[in-house]
Length: 164
Image 1: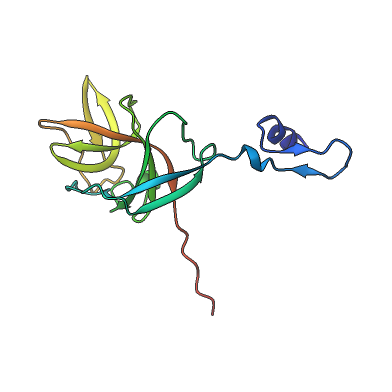
Image 2: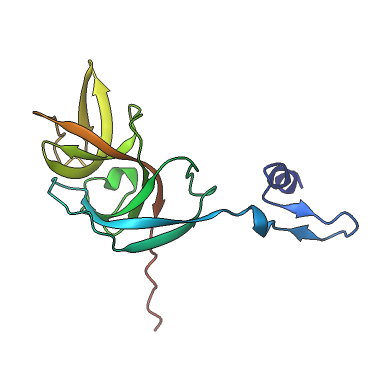
């Protein structure tokens, strides 16, 4: 019963006042947002990518941790350098356009003219991009490091098992 009360407090459930088993999910509180998918981003060695819209992904903004006030976009992950952060090839990462990056955030970044998805690390006053796979090196910017977006959510397409 405490779980139902917690969901009620958070606004995910309502109870019908005069019925014993009447839980209502407030559909009107769901805020669906369409996020454009701008191609692929390497989670491996960085490469140049073009920004063309491939489609959209529709998400509940609240459960996807998307803020109302920031631009948002999605990129399809290509590669396995972020596998330690449970981001795999084919996943779609949802990012917000944010110049405020925190140590440890997963970011889409332009590093020396090439785009990649990595963990942002600030150490001894110097930033670098860390892969979450020991087979890949850390990327230390020689000239330029521009954060293009901070990851706020992840969408994974489940593959169906074949039935025999």
